[in-house]
Image 1 (cartoon, rainbow, N blue to C red):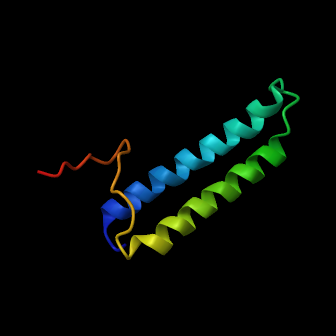
Image 2: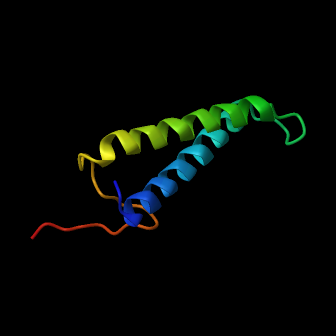
Length: 79
């Protein structure tokens, strides 16, 4: 949890989760861009991002979960 690679991967996961939640809320109602409930959508996406960060921090020190794949991560193969 004290490595730069951990925080880089965590930041990617947080941003990805934020974007997914935002698109889910906005896409669910098929709103026009001016009619979209931006406050609720950003609030929901922000909460999802915080939960992704807390999950990464809570499990990061124990080495749980797979290392990737992600845009900044490489897939590890077992030989």
